[in-house]
Length: 153
Image (cartoon, rainbow, N blue to C red; front, side, top):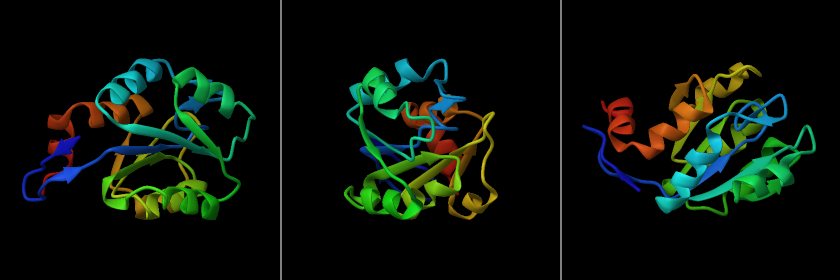
């Protein structure tokens, strides 16, 4: 999908790297509204992949429910290595925890979600956009006007 924020230029994104716990799920359950948004993003042509430390052991089940790929990672370094499989300039990462720094470092657009499980302060220096929920993050990508307004200079 192509975005064109004023005074920034065209940004083409086609891959979304997602975190699970504290991002797509809170206290082990997918956040209400995530499933239809993931479906819409897939319809828009995005490749979605879940990179997770799988703190609660539910990643495979939840990825299957969402219809997306999952890769279990045990550290920020493993997340970084797996994110490098995708073209940095076309990748957006969404997360909330210190383990997500690896995905943020290797993504063009980095979005942090501030939900019930909190956000680790160290990630803030890697983030382009901070939103209150995963649904807000996904809506930014679904609606180019909102993304463009947020990213404009």
